[in-house]
Length: 213
Image 1 (cartoon, rainbow, N blue to C red):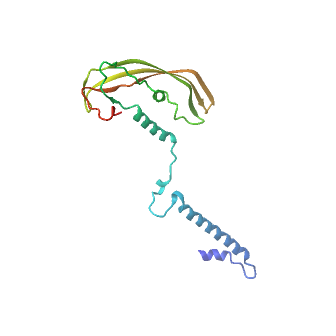
Image 2: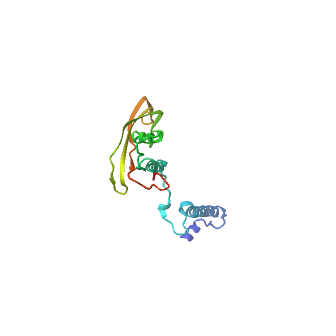
Image 3: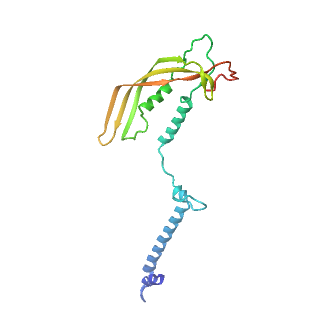
């Protein structure tokens, strides 16, 4: 095959041979450049072939940062607000009143779960919330009689229920197929948050700490 290719560029007797060999040199140069490009592609980055590789699975797949933030937000809520604290016994003669209303951060997360704004598609559909104001009202505060709770022992459950009303303005931006913006200046959302917790009963040795929360 190579002999046939070379015979095509072999000039007749008496004619110069510069043209045929110039074309052959150009084809050979292009072939060498292609081979060098293939070698450099397989020896760099995600296609490195030295040592054990994962093949096509070594190519990184782009992931939206929304999913990373979603897992971090779930852990934030679980670590701060999803656990039930166990406090010491109620002081004799003192009022059994809950003194820790929901913080603005806790109400904000409850509002986000009830009326989410995250996870929109930029330039296609987005929701914004502005001018947020919270009003917190305690609607129930009472203590159950003592009873034995598994893994805790004798304890009382202290119920504390709050009604939180959020006032805000909401802006929805739609970019396709017909770009438009919807602004609601008078939005309202009612949220109910429970701050139930346990009080240990009896002569309990609390040790150096007064709470395990």
